[in-house]
Image (tube, rainbow, N blue to C red; front, top):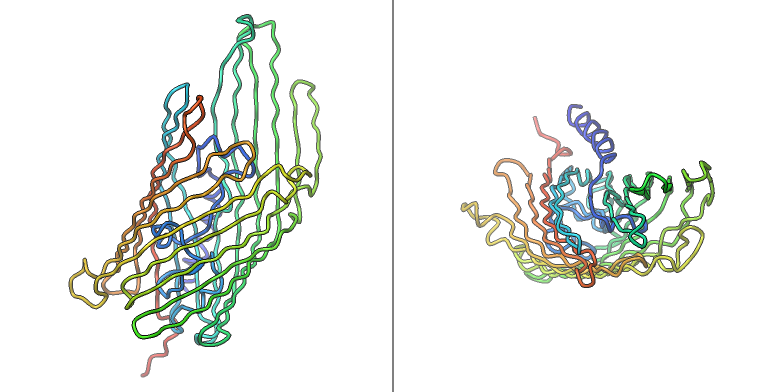
Length: 405
C-alpha cells in the first residue's frame, strides 16, 4: 500500500510542477512551442532513439509494442528531472538562461506473463516560455520597444497495452489525453508620451484524445538480436480547442476559432542490433506532417517536422564484480527540422550518458548530458546553444513473486 501511495503522490506532484515553464527559448513562440519526443532518459542518451528499442531495463512510451519486453514478475517505475542551461545570441548581444523541470513519470507492469503488458504515465507534449524585447525608431522621431512574452504548454496522460502476438512479433497502442493552455503576448510602447502604444494577448486552451500504434519484429540467433519497429498516429482535430484574443488598443475582447486546430499524422521506423547483451546500436527516423493540419483554421501554416537519431550503448560485462564494467555507457546524435514556417532553424544534438546500476536492487540511475544547437547569427538571426542534464531513477521490483513459506 505504501508503494501505491508513493506513486499516486508523485504523479500528482508531477502534474502540478508542469504548470511551470521548461524553456526560455524565443523559438518556442512559434506554433505550439517546443515539442517533446517522450523518450526515457536511457534512450535520450543514445541520441533519442526508441522506435526500434526493446529492453526490460527501460520503459519506452515512444514505442507501445515494447512493453511486453518487461520481466513477467517485475513492476517498473521511472521518474526523471532535467536542468537546462541555454545561451542565446543575435546582433543585440548574448543572453543566458537556466531552467529546471520534471521530465516524466511512467510505470509498467505485466498483465499476463510475457504475453500482455501495461504502461501508463504523465509527460509533457510541448512547452512555451519566452520573454524578450526589441527596440527601434521611426525616422528617429518615435522610439518604440516591442516586447514578446509567452508561457504554458500541453501535457499528456497516457495508458498503453502491448501484446506478444507470437515469439517474434509484438503489437501495442497508447491512448493519450492531452490538455493545456498557451498564452502569448505582444506589446508596443513608445518613449514619447504623445504616441499611443498597443498590445495583444492570445489565449489557446485545448483538450483531446489521440492514439498511437506500434509494432516490432524481433529475432535472436546466438548472441545476436535484431529488432525492427514502426509507429503510426492518425491526423485528427483537437476535441476541444478555444482561442481568445484581447487587444488593448480598442479595449475589445474577441473570441473566435473554436475547434480550428489539428494534430498531424505521424509515422516512424527504427532498427536496433544487440550483441551478447553488452553492445546495442540503434537508429530512428520520425516524421510529423504538420503541413496538412489546420492551424487557426488554415493549412500550410506549419510544415513537416523530421527527426533522425542514432546511438550506441555499451556494457563491458554485466556479471563482473568490477562496478565500472557493469555500468552502461551511451553515446548518440540527432538532427531535427523545425515545424513552423516562421523559422528554418534545424536542431542538432549530441548526447552522452552513463547508467549506474545499484548493487542490491533492480534500479538503474541514468544520467544524460546533451549539447544542442539551432540557428545561426548570419544577418542578425537568433542562435541557440544549450546544455541539458537529465537524471532518472528506473526502479524495478519483484512485486508479483509468490514466496514459499
